[in-house]
Image 1 (cartoon, helix red, strand yellow):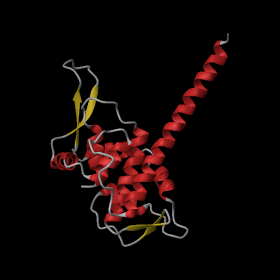
Image 2: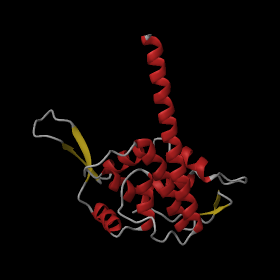
Image 3: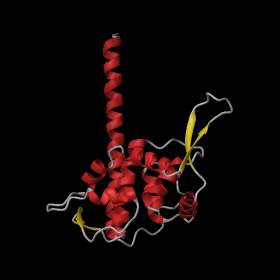
Length: 201
């Protein structure tokens, strides 16, 4: 299992609260992958750039794809650039892969046969592991969830991360999500202004 899959499962939880934006989640998933690659020794972070290290030994398909997309030559890629590049439609890729592997299940939201379907994590060891990490308020998972608007219940006063590289990635995820929200707000304002222009006085 990977931090990215744990995060995806937490984000898919049907509990009440605002739905997580797919763009936000994609950025956070890219950050989670990078943190797992750091933990595996496949990359290090130097001056905000991702420096490849040893090969990734993970048998996870999506994490393997992430490792294969690393920039191998200097100047290496900045964390922020990686998040936007790797994160493009990444939540959809995780949903498809996890459905294929039986980690997600489709359920109808009502009793009627034509009621809309929703996708939920299946009751698997994968889901239970993610739930255990969540209940323990594991710092990395909690921080990434917080970036996409999921309240982990952790206090901001709790200790941070021992690894500076992980701290840099989490900070970059927060910045990227804020930037994406700023883009959304700007588009909303522009669209409203355009509609008012055509509506006239």
